[in-house]
Amino acid sequence: MTDLRPLRDFVRAATEAVALPRPEADLLADLRGRLATLVSRDDWLPDELAQPHPQFYRQYLLHCDPLERFSVVSFVWGPGQQTPVHDHTVWGLIGMLRGQEESQPYAPDAGGAMVPQGAPTRLVPGQVEAVSPTLGDVHLVRNAVPGQVSISIHVYGGNIGAVQRWVYAADGTRKPFISGYSNTMLPNLWDRSKEGA
Amino acid sequence: MTDLRPLRDFVRAATEAVALPRPEADLLADLRGRLATLVSRDDWLPDELAQPHPQFYRQYLLHCDPLERFSVVSFVWGPGQQTPVHDHTVWGLIGMLRGQEESQPYAPDAGGAMVPQGAPTRLVPGQVEAVSPTLGDVHLVRNAVPGQVSISIHVYGGNIGAVQRWVYAADGTRKPFISGYSNTMLPNLWDRSKEGA
Ligand SMILES: [Fe+3]
Ligand SMILES: [Fe+3]
Ligand SMILES: [Mg+2]
Image (cartoon, rainbow over all chains, first blue to last red; front, side, top):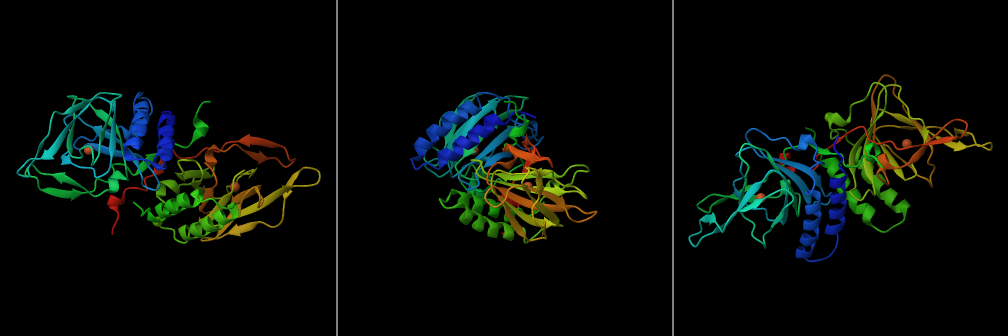
């Protein structure tokens, strides 16, 4: 059993953070620092929630705020896996835990087609990036390490697996999707009886 | 997969309830009604969290409030199983889901020995009872149905598996214990993508 305290500490702090009345930018600056602390070590994610699937990237829910104000997800990339071009509709923070991933922003061109916008960002362990409807919300993400599993920890401003959002085709047409989650069981963060002092 | 909505609805309502500034009696009256609704049907508890152990009663955490203001637990009794005489140190509500259990209150006698106090209470499905330091906090609970599994849903005013509390010997001496939980994985209440409209 891994020591889940880093994740529990993050969940508690994020629960307190989302309850404060303040601008989104201030909330994100706060959570960004806390997520950086969480992904500064790679010794707490249970193996069950770090398993790749041969065909599909996995989205394991680690915690959902009971009022659905935020959620914490482990994204597990098998070799060569990537998302479609998609949006989020809520703010998101991405903290790299293991391996590397590359995010390519997209934006509509003058003719309405959805095209790459600027250079991709490559995340390395410990690094944190943000997406949001205000910062730029459409991207394609891929595992950037050939032949290896990569894992990032995502925090979203809602129950992301239940949010109705969009995937985009190259011609700019879009289809609605709701991602759901890959796991039916969550880690029990709350059994302090098995922890050392 | 069972439909977890009744449990999710309870968790959301209880999260909102514990945040209100009001006397404990008002909170308990509110939660008591909501717990009665939850145990009025027996179609939502996942089988993994309803399994008895041959020797020991099981305490499966279903949900812990991230600020540890309350927790929800399924108590699963195998045939003939019972607790020691114990206390809770925080308020508790017990809603009977399946089978029956019997709770015998205890209190110290004039010489300091811990003795049964009054008649036992027998709970039947749908029924809800309360314990608390103010209402009477020490009892022994047992499965009241011979040869069958019984299950009750408990709600406590804290992360009960992490609370330092006490078991009592007949002579009144007590020993500290922290119960922990029987499960390392919790139900994912938040994947609405697999639910009907
Ligand atoms: Fe994304
Ligand atoms: Fe008890
Ligand atoms: Mg059933």
